[in-house]
Image (cartoon, rainbow, N blue to C red):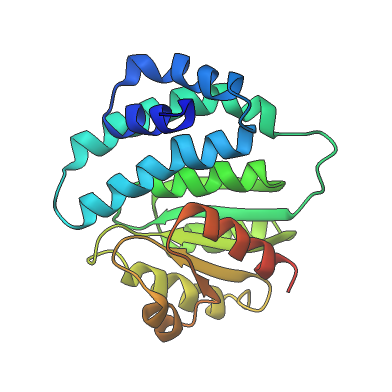
Length: 212
């Protein structure tokens, strides 16, 4: 088994104490930092996220694995962020009102930073008016990314889009959404500009929207 595969297995199994050494081993094996991030640290969280959605695991397992992933990210991140990287623009990231899940949102924010975006992370349980205020405070923002993990909170995305419209800001930013309960049909229904199923695809979508 490659060191990269070993790292992914360690993260997925929640062996937090072993992640740091496994991450360094994957890098020493010759894997690029972005590959280690995507395949060794992010992918096992995506796998667990799907298992969580299907009810095969519960929040504690996801949180433990996320803790391990963050330890690996601390090692990889300095290798990813280059001072001469082309700027992709500014993006605002939130988990919507009523929702306290931020693992997916944090992953997307991390990958966006690594891709050259300036990320304004508002955190969890963010009301529509707070998002409107953030867009007003950041006139150079190109994209607003919203995450929801619960069917009971996903409609806060629609409320936010309506709030941006009422404030006259909807044509100023592109809106992208993600999270377990949402899909492309829902994105179309609420008037979002895009939807992605996982963190790496979210970054590619953000690039397209930012430069549309």
